[in-house]
Length: 512
Image (cartoon, rainbow, N blue to C red):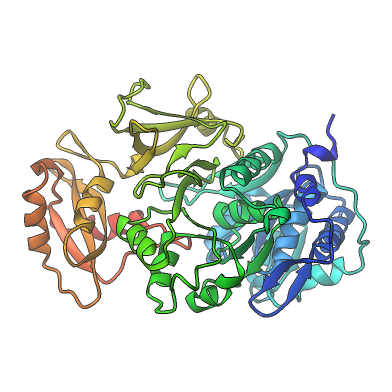
């Protein structure tokens, strides 16, 4: 029978410290929220949502700017037993139209500035309720919830009930809604609490600098669940700003970021061992961390970044150890409870150190894609492993290295070319800041590679010279047919290079 103990919010709330008047969240605008504020605020929002008499399993779609009230809305949705649907704030009308049409949310929450067009799309799709929520604590949602009771009984759920639908980026077609359950997220939060050595109050406690967006797995689940399941304070930044992070760093102990954030922090003269002296752990994910950045961070701060690997469908899968060697360029070991294997095209295990497709199984793996049973069945093996779509290898010590996405694999003249391998060589060349290699159509070879390269500040790169150096190092079939030097690479909000845009840009280039 369902009961409140299977509800993720129940476990997060149970971890709140005994002193509910202590600060739970401090914002960069100087606002302070106590643990009691979180408890009362989520209760009022949960009561309000339930007063709408929504059907069981209703989706609550949310596209709002980052705020503590938006965090409360997420927790309130869990608490009330509904399904949270976070949407990237960069999405425009065509994208929102698709998500609302696909997910059919009972409630949509947006910023006041977007209410006109969002509400039109929502009402046309049959959504009954559209509310506003702004980052200055205004909006119709808070106005309505202000009249609700601040006492609320957590909704009874089962561990396999869907708690969140996260839409994938959709770089190879329409976005798919990954259904994550209360059990998926609780298991991952508890594993990471132990694996990353979160300190209890008796051990001095941890304080997290939260500088990530909250519409993505990294910021919404890994960071927030990590702090809450440990009863740890968060320093809440509305957006990432390097100087603001450095200002709060002496008061904090944990920071989570994407590689781009670490690069920007390294550009700040104020980043010193003294400023980072109180910090315990720096974690990086969502995109590959360059070895140069890894080493530069060690040299500047005395800290070694912990890189990990996860995805929307699985939350976290692997991590470098908290205690033990953190190998740059790897994403560490499979987390406790996660079974990870590297296989060839026929599903047979590949030898240690060889490249293959990564498949995973564990309590953190999602329940399937929303309203896509055929696609869900296609992405799982007969013995229950999820095909991640990532290509990688595992070394003799068990460290996993991600080589790239299977969709990024270039098959040129019948040979497999892995962009990540080429990028690692290019990134080591003098004057190169970063690179991306993509495959484009070719009349003879089927596909060929195009290297897109960004120079370090003040450096002039010669594209022909880069290709000549690669020809002297790599097998000829691996060498890109073209090299383009650009000012920067297109990235999404989580810092991942948008290779689909590069493929489109250079598809018609002369690659003979």
